[in-house]
Image (cartoon, rainbow over all chains, first blue to last red; front, side):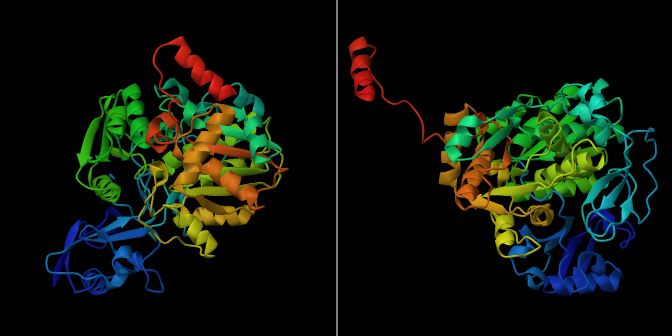
Length: 94
Length: 428
């Protein structure tokens, strides 16, 4: 499966400044492996030392926050758009 | 964002000296890495949130007291320039601290104050944070003030931009109630209705903030400055008590930033010698229908699992609160906790505050008053200790919360006899 991944500004040092890249995989974990192969070092910015999603990063598969759809096991289908977004805004905020 | 951030970014070109007052850098609250002052909000090392760091000079009570009756009296403690009061802003803050004797008696508390932030220019505490964000936007040369919001924040951004004479863009869910849309649209902001729920709006805002140069999303890319505005709640409470920190404070928790910044404000006053160093306890208050931080507290966790909000307290309905872990740190460090009350209790608590003190709070105020009562009956809150409860907004913004609970006692024909019949029955 090939997915499109939107890269936040602070990670574009790993993608040569590109804001959107392709990656393969049928789960989010596999997509991140694919990202790492193409852009070494990027996965460690998204996952912590224990391999879990960092506290302050949100990842969306399609429109869904992956924390609600299985985390790293979230299913990825052909053409899915994946967004990686710093979790600072975090909600309706008044 | 104007630039890709590396691990040691150069200062933003064109920043004037003193653009951020006594703030000297941004620091990651997760890993402690330092970043230069700029439109940066997430740590390049770990995605952690950035916070303003300072080198404070000596600051006296007299100097603060001689300042304007707004948050700008505390300008030396904020990331704003020394001449901030000369710029056009809504000049929020210095809201009243109400000696709430009737409610104290009703609750069985010895001494209680309500910090009533409904008195701000757009009737919520959001005017404080937006005023500081507006200053950061101006100093960074950003031309558009923007936010994703469902209410209070949108009102504050639209009004502040109007007053400052700059462009604003407010993103709201398309199904938002008309009253809330009008209360922002009246300021002639560019209001964009998004076909989606709050989470969709926030996600889009984060993406726009990452792509568009020249935009200040107040609670996204200038959040390290924005959030500092909430420290002024802590400063004001202490000054209004006669330069004293109260024994315990009950604070509403949405993103959690307000609670952590009140704590930061108190600690800064102690560090600067402006108040006596004494212990204080901070309690967080949430609505049961969106209580991820209270749940995490009870479960003994140091992280917050997101929830899907389902409560009438919309201004607190953040399912994935960015500052949640830091709220847990603060309440545990000070000996407090985070508790929640259900929608029925919070609505009844809005009535209780109105009935006893003549203050009409929005749902968030119902939550803090309700949690205060709950913590007293649970024996957690000390009834002998001096207590401050935050009301962060105006009840006129959340009329639906009490629409089914209050109203006319009776409808009668316009005749004196009819009135007399009713009045006799009522008073017999």
